[in-house]
Image (tube, rainbow, N blue to C red; front, side, top):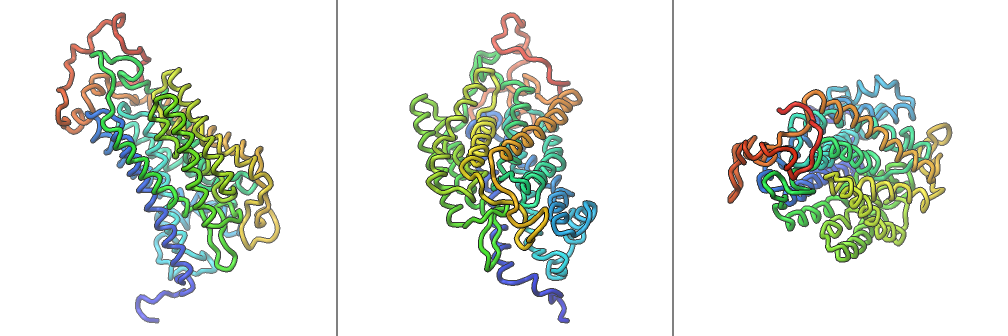
Length: 476
């Protein structure tokens, strides 16, 4: 054999190369979506927190990605080991953890009888790992401008290393326990949006609102966003990234066709059309609400609401139906948004999207796609994991929603409540008003005022105009 020649050429075919490129693009698109989220929040935070907002999101993204990379992919692969009788849970971990036998060998040297399409799996490993980082960035919205960096980074490690792999294994992938029973989720609405929305809600309630959001801060000021136009540009970046991410949620079998990640019969043309119909429908209703309420937030969230609502069923819904689903999505988003304002929970993006559009879309797919075959795996003709052995229905979609919310609540109790008692979650009032850029990086934005003096915080509680909140742990 020539030096460098693959031992198993069947692992390196043109068809495999095409799939490699598809999943590579999807993985990079997740990073692009993170850029979009950073731009959105950079436009919405106060000037004195711009740099630290970027730093926390970038580091949190990488910490969660790395935490998942250790054993998370092995946890997800276990569903296929069970379906194809490839070995135990321990064997799946041994093969696919970061230093596992299939993660430390070139795909051309791996026997396809043992791990067919090894290079595709290795790239898919990256796709799922960066998606863990994306979820961690979504969660950051619940503590924007006021969470301690140390607490946030621990949260990212816990989500990426424990809770995201667990929920992913339960609800995503055609032979996962719930998917094989009938739960349907193409783009990861359960593990991404609904989980992140629930967790961010718990985080935002625990850390309390930013100073000045619902009433003036101790110096009589209300927060002023840095650049709403930049936030709008971030939304456009997200709209560019989402269709590419969707590509990573499809299977293609030469000669058999396209299938969604849950093994539902589909087609890339219909899926792509559905994504943009969701954008259009959401944008239309978002615009109606924005002009009616004179609130630009609804206009920015509208197309995103459509895509979040359609995420569960891009692969099984007709485009005209997806347009209607997208059109209705901003309504539950607006209802959740108004409820958060009423109860003074300072989070206006992922909580309304996840708990409004995410749950609405997941349940609606159970209705409009009721009876569509799903689950199992192509090539398995009988038994528990037979190809398309399950059917989509409202009951199983509700179970999927309940599972995502339940695991997020457990994660919140462990990470949010636990960290609050051990190290505290929130920065001090003085640090928040002075700005994290000044506190952590000794930088001030152009035209910014110097940090407020300690005397600014000596106002008696009886005359203090900001809301009183319970201590959230020892100051850092």
